[in-house]
Image 1 (cartoon, rainbow, N blue to C red):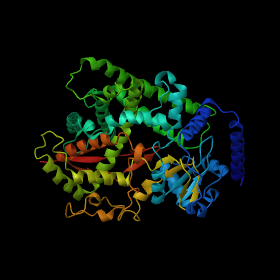
Image 2 (image 1 turned 45 degrees about the vertical axis):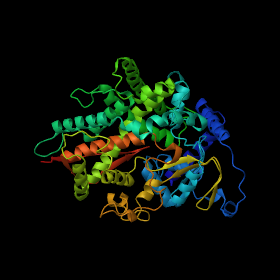
Image 3 (image 1 turned 90 degrees about the vertical axis):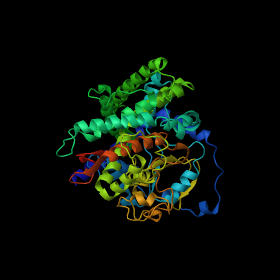
Image 4 (image 1 turned 180 degrees about the vertical axis):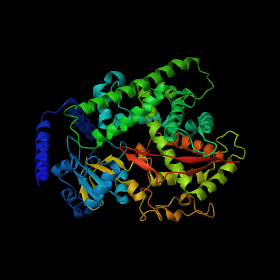
Length: 537
């Protein structure tokens, strides 16, 4: 009884504090409100809806969900969601409130409607317009635009920018990062990096147990960073050598801290826009360290451009420098940050499922033997053109465990979602991961079944009927104009290393339980990640 009274007092105190601080906005809060208003003003408003669907829909206020006070109580010490990760938070809220529920906006943020209805996904995406609004990491925007304008010159990058400012950047970088031929010109060096990783793996293997000494996931992070560094900077970092650059290991650690902090300050309720706590100040210090390391890499690359062989493919940085230096620096910085944890985590996930399913692994290896009869041959655009089972394995791994549990948009029109009116300017979180693991949408959803992604008639084991007929259920890289800008690079890196690894080793999972994940703003494997790598004679 005493604990309940104390919790109620804490809730009331927090609510009174919220009312007080909303009257005394800090620079970050003002920036947020001005940005939101500016973006909505840039988006041409649709006329008021008077159609039958809108008139018959239930009022917005009737969408299930907790009140502001109850939401705060959930996240206080002793609350039902205190110290809960993102996956568990989504799962429990869905259990309590159903397949559509509303989280009330606090601290200047808009309400967010969570939906697990793929029809709602389609409605949201089909009405997002040319400039989709996806308010992401607000601490990221604050750091770049308010805290460190001296470094970023007022440019937030694709994660932070919205509206016309976002479109201007995206239109400049799309031809560089989304054009298949431009990305695949990096295949020879990406292949060499994959071979270097395999060579290093061999030095770490115990010939008796076929296990490695050291942390496999950390080794993969170095592979991922070496790969993205080459694409971004046209430069090898030597991270797969005996003496890797210590700054890369520091960056990997700071990125882990970044994801943890971002979940705490960007996802959970926080007062940082109004009052900079000691914890948030440490977050800003982490941002500073990441900025320092990535900036040093970029400056060194720019100095090297004058002496490079002109026959080499132009790096992303070099191509974008011709368009806009500030955008070039910010985009490459984002690539170095995003390409480390996300790609390595996705690779571990896919390899785990192949390791747990030896029949599927052998089926894939037969395809790889056709692609690469001699494991010492080079990978080329020609011999990697037709790899349907490999690409199906990648899709299936990301279906079961995508890098993020959902996709987010701010509505630019009044919408009807699951029979409720959702007004313009409301956040919508689409829970794709939960639906991708539901038998309602994927037959035998718990099973790793790459065959569900093969085209009908392409092979005897193809079973496309085992996947959802609704294309909006599976969207690991997002949808539409704001599709993940690094999609093609990540796919190239993962495909290349899987070919090299499985062409030389049979892989088994040795863990005594299924692969575990830490869930912050991304899903990252954690715990004892133990594979065996048996050389193929």
